[in-house]
Length: 281
Ligand code: SAH
Image 1 (cartoon, rainbow, N blue to C red):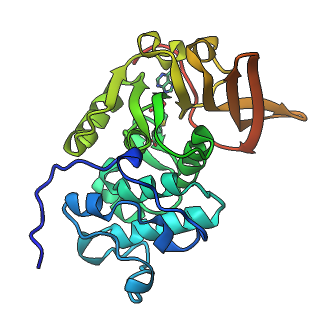
Image 2 (image 1 turned 45 degrees about the vertical axis):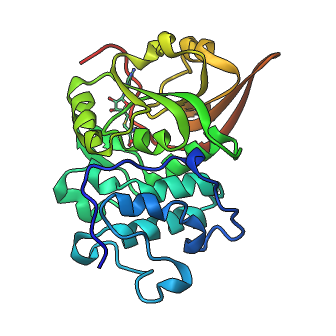
């Protein structure tokens, strides 16, 4: 048997090796971007496709011997079946161990497509929505994104996925308790290009600007101007924003592209994110 390498280990980023072309994204086999990185994490590479007839479907509540690789592969296959087609995003999602970002009592649910509590009234986002937003952010382009700003670190899960897709990630959190927890959760992963910031993300982070991408994990009434100011020309912002739909207000995903001629906005599906709040706590 192969010697298990020790943890911590480093994940592999999207630009570090060529991303395989994907034809049928619902095939689990198509999602196996970096088995080498997976085995570096102290577990076997995901067993996929034709090579794994018996292990590809495992009930989410019974991970074999505490090894979550198979349930994670299932989670990613479900996300692909929902319509996420960006193979680089799917591969990144299959690399990051979501259960490490939630309380051990929630480990069995960590690979279900649901948000889960992470303390202080906040939640880890639904993985399907994380994938969808990252796909929108990447505009399905090949290669690494440049510098990205994330507002709402929470437990740090999305920040970890982002760090595999971008050259540099700045992630801001306004709640000290969660900022500290994210640091703990992320420390073993040693993601050198991920910078956690304790601060009010409403103001963005001017020192890191301009950003190729800005992504918010909390929803406000509008997109703060600081964010569009800090976006590079050619950059894209993805955020949940409250919008009036008839007599109701509904949170929807908004995409803003900054072009040489100004901002271009498109409105996408309804979502349910925690509120964007100002100030620190
Ligand atoms: N990115 C997380 C989701 C965290 S939930 C994931 O991987 O699942 C959203 C987070 O946004 C909460 O932790 C909340 O405290 C934070 N938040 C809300 N308003 C903020 C602001 N103005 N600046 C920074 N973080 C904010």
